[in-house]
Length: 277
Image 1 (cartoon, rainbow, N blue to C red):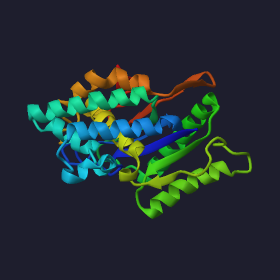
Image 2: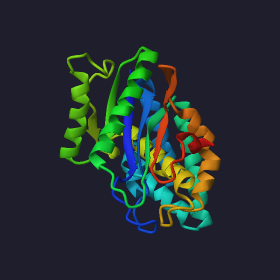
Image 3: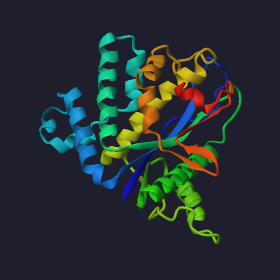
Image 4: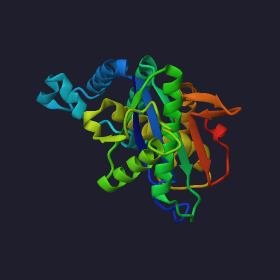
């Protein structure tokens, strides 16, 4: 069995000008791991948080499992990269070095969608998020077929109405008259809180601390001038681009290479291949 954890970074909201303090991109990513790796990945992530934040929980930190409640968010790490503090930047790279190592050890595979906004245009947030989830389900289904496995998808909870819409969009694909499009997924996506799922915390780090700055450096630098585009982000690409590229789940179908991280660039019309070039 495999588990797929889904999270997002940024938002689909309209960016009115190139200098407006609005995120210029929206990332939705799934991380699949074998269920047999869940325990080891969880323990390793808790140890990582404990090692880098030894005093964060005080007396509560003496109970190892309480470290699940400490959130080292991707947005926080991204903020450290922008801080200009050598100490805070060094902390972030040390943390991400170790985090990617544990993702590699526990056979994580990554796939998802990155949406680059065009200044002045509006994005239909519901449609973009729903189509991203369906694309992730497609890739997860192929992975499960190749591994002769079954799976469950756990997404970071949004609000009940949004959760229901997304789950129903998968429901209509799974129970359609033409047949089950996601036959190896045991149920509709379920929604969890990150404090209860190490996998959701890992998905947040991939989304917010790695893919967001990487995509910002590639597709937005030189065009967008706000807090979400920073020179330090180019170093994220140089340091981690190859490792993230290898984590992608890619496959051939109908004579085309599919899966992995797919980019829709409405800003400069650059191809998805530029993400790792």
